[in-house]
Image 1: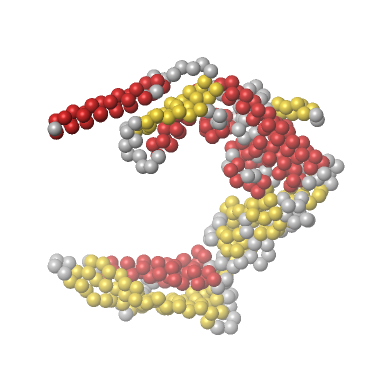
Image 2: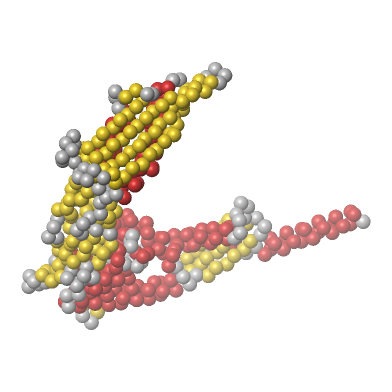
Length: 460
């Protein structure tokens, strides 16, 4: 009976395997050749994949293969051909054309087949249908680009400069997926070539926009907020040489030398002016710079902000900008330290000098004259020996560190800040000097972590 059941099971298995093999489509066994279709085939083994990851991988492989069959013809009136001397531009976009093609392809047929081990996908796209869709999409893109380009010119004539720029950038965005196509267009207003026309219009437009400031030079203390803002004015020179302010013009303020926190993205008011406050300097460089420039990202859709096409139409040398010079001013102060090491005044004052250098780098210029100083700084530092921990063949030395730090007004002699750090422990084998070095390092770390942020908040 058992032998009969085993025989039946074997027959059923063979029948199932045979049916599965019979069900396997021809395109799995041999790649089809159809002149009227672009074809892509992808296969993934199911082992090692979770969920439907294997299906996604196979579909992506088939789509990539099908896209690779589509020949990219570069038109003589395309951006790639017009700017073929720009190697970086060509290299960037030739690599992106296939990527954008994968993302924009539609209208293809999909077939799948699978067994327990494999998952297969066939994609095919009718060549005539693809050509028809591509031409339709290109014509729609040209119509949009022409509409925005002509709108940009009209707005410029009306001296609506920001709105004009926004229209030009929409025209550029319309062409994002058509870099290799013929971008000439016949409109009721005449013939257009989007590549050269937009480039020339923008260069002329930016050449008439100027960013200026009545106060290009500023001084600011390291930790203080700026009392007067960085103020810029944006104007446009008309054909007859008249200067008009540009309102709603997007600007970006940023440090080009040094670093700090400031208001970055601002638009101009009706008078063409925009102001940004430096909230805090973060660099101790004496000479720093903040540059304000046209912020094209405010006029683009988020997905196109980093588009190389936008960057090509907006070369750095054409972007209107202005640079402010920032000079770091540090408050004068005296520094008095009492550093005790193991019960004796330190002759070298290693930690005191490190502390003074840290404060000099950021907040203060130190002077020995109390009359010149705005603040009086006092640091009482004490390093004391701890116990020696002995083990089997080793000795570990302990040193404890304490710091009391205070700041007073030189004019009123009033203490405005005081803090104490105590019980910092240095522990090293060998001798007390090794442990002392670790205690010094840990005390400095604690000063920077605990006291330094509080000093920043005092606005010296």
